[in-house]
Length: 480
Image 1 (cartoon, rainbow, N blue to C red):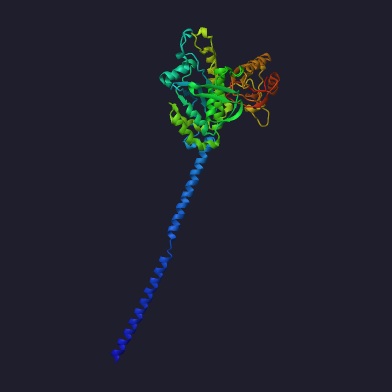
Image 2 (tube, helix red, strand yellow):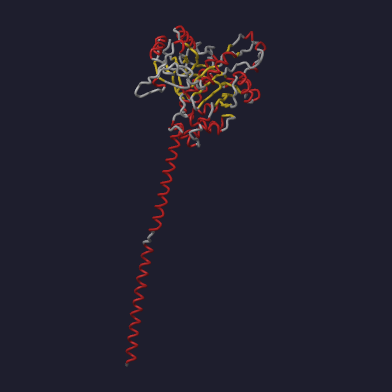
């Protein structure tokens, strides 16, 4: 009996233990099932938060460094582009003036290459000054004009052997420049470029009506400001004279001189309108046009160093001119129409256009300036000094922007009669108003005297420590 009771008690304990284990397992199973439905990832969330925080901090640091470099590179679009291509604040200082020969070529129906445009172009990123010098197509490259042939004209050199170096050598010989680079632009590329920037607004100087079936060239443009597409732009820059023999008016520059002037002014318009911010998004299309239609020995690494600073170029700093010389009578040049360069005038012009503009003037010893040493602010900067030079000591530069060549000489003569020392002259694009720019803080009385002499002009302060003149006058169309 006692043994039976003991067995019953042991069985009961075993059942209780078994039931307890079953409940625990059931509970664990439910918990496992619940965890599968709602998994917890506290550790992963913390890891991602840390990663995102690190990325954000890195972006902030990188952005700050980039912004600082942009600031050191001058800020604005120029600073952004300079930083993007790896420049620092010293890169621009080490860039010299870039000069190159620019040739515009077309092809006639017989496949002959015609050199319609010959120019020397320069750009200095440190002074933000540029130059376009036109070379007449008929410029004689031989030694004896009395025995001239058409093959000795500069526009025939490229068509003979299609070697740009031959043209480069000829231009260097004429100008005395040591040009190393050339850029040859096909007519097709010129047309596509104008179309790529959605046309160019330009004031066509005269009615143009000309047809040359041998070149498949047909020019029909009306005078006045208008938007020119690529086809009309080609007509504009290739025009010399009308079917009836008439050409540009003499004061503008007839035939080839007129065409060169129109080409220079149109190029200025293209530069100004291409440099718009919205055209940055068309850079790929522009580069594609260049790749297909431009022949050059300029390395891309050279170009990319200048681009960041060229985007902020102001065409008001562009000087344009044509090679000086004469066109002798046909009976003196073997019946061939040629242009003979004036070597002396050319040397002077080259010096003014490509050297004098960028050479800083030597520091003065201060004997021609006065400062107020007793002034409580003790200001001794150039902005507080007034030149005490007499009229004959003041160096005056006259730039002709009237569009009429005779106006330049008229202004120079008037200033010299009044006692002013005109040391430099030049030509720029046509501008509506005459401006008298104070480069060396000249006194108001002298500037007002210049204004009275010219009977026109607005006085502006434009001080420049590197200027080689005291006053620069830009003659506008309001000058008669």
